[in-house]
Length: 193
Image (cartoon, rainbow, N blue to C red):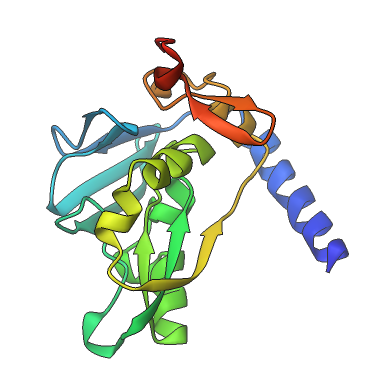
């Protein structure tokens, strides 16, 4: 098992290094993202959201995301799901399903295969600090209407920079101070971000 994680890590590292010089332009609906008091930023629109990504003039993807009333990428087929148990996903654009159709994103596929309801708290550029803030401020508890069997967060090395506040798009994201065995929001310490 360790060998597989090592191999997948090498493959991911290869693609990050080899694609470092490729420049992409992404376009979304007007007003798709705005500031959020708890998470730093979040989607403000509900319903269908279109996203197009270009490499020079070539279209890389042109997709529509279904965003539910809670601002999440719709990830469950309610008609066939077991509502007594569920799985909660956190991470960034990969969990959100950036560039793929609703029925192609990871949380949806897990829910479909396991016949279980899933919640997708992933979003573009998010890191562990958004997950902690969503849990800390009761956002997850407010949205999730069943007892989660699992909470899944897939980390990768670049999340360290995000949680350290070094991501240029996330300057207003949640910030925490690690004190021995607990994380304290900086706002509770009287420190402004």
